[in-house]
Image (tube, rainbow, N blue to C red):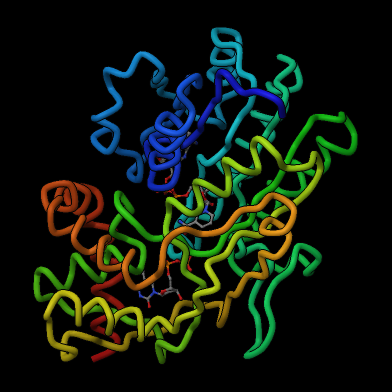
Length: 345
Ligand code: NAD
Ligand code: TYD
């Protein structure tokens, strides 16, 4: 699209959406951003405190699954484009409450597509995930042509959303683009995901729960590289297309955990192999040739340096981390992790 003056970012109080909102305001001096977020357990406005007084930034609280709230949002603002991040994002949680994932991830996406169409929004960028492709064997990488074979309710709800986006493009000619990115890490990630969880536990000398044999492989990308990729897709991506985004950094979980312990100077005796996640995808790896060749995107950060910097950020922001790990999270942590630890011993 030629120019995007006002961008709706959904889920901007979460990990990637918040980093993206800040990145876009810094990168595009003429862009205004409205952040629409329901502030679930994963949403935290404290992560965006530095944007509060920015005249080009506004926050609106609401759920993408709430039809009236979405209609009000689009009636009150004129958006050039939508970058849709808002989602329930944790695979483990989707194993016990799939319905919420369908409501937010699938129905919520349809609500946004309907509103975009009704209000003549020029472009909808759907932030999807490599998990829609399912699991790889020991060789190969996912391309944009790989079959959609999700293995858990989170991945299935994201795949459903991708199909709804495709349908909006095909049937209604709404200008849509889908990005499918690998695992992100960086500042402000909720400490239920592998890297921030392991950092938080190690700092408290608590056991680090590694699922199964720990040889599951994820393709890690620093969050700001994901942000620059979405920026490229927003401005230059071809309507109706899908773009894979990956870091070409395929690492077994156990190696990520050992590296973190090394950076923190903590002993490997903290590692505890626990009961595996049901339906646990063995390996993800992304072929991102298309976005590199067609849109000229390249990641700017190297894994080891970015990981070290991420650990430093968590060390400098322990209050943020401790608040994220308080309240309702405590109950969740008890059921998900402590039971697993008990079963392991
Ligand atoms: P997150 O869990 O950190 O944040 C999600 C945000 O969405 C939160 O602020 C939450 O309050 C908000 N939200 C949840 N339900 C909502 C609703 N009904 N209405 C409005 N807001 C709602 O997630 P994240 O890791 O930042 O992921 C953002 C997006 O990127 C998701 O769509 C996810 O599928 C995708 N993605 C994530 C990764 C990753 O490694 N984290 C990788 C690829 C793709
Ligand atoms: P996670 O951060 O939940 O992301 P995703 O499931 O979307 O890839 O998990 C990353 C990998 O780490 C995944 O293979 C599951 C594993 N894992 C653990 O071994 N222990 C943990 O406590 C967590 C949260 C994840």
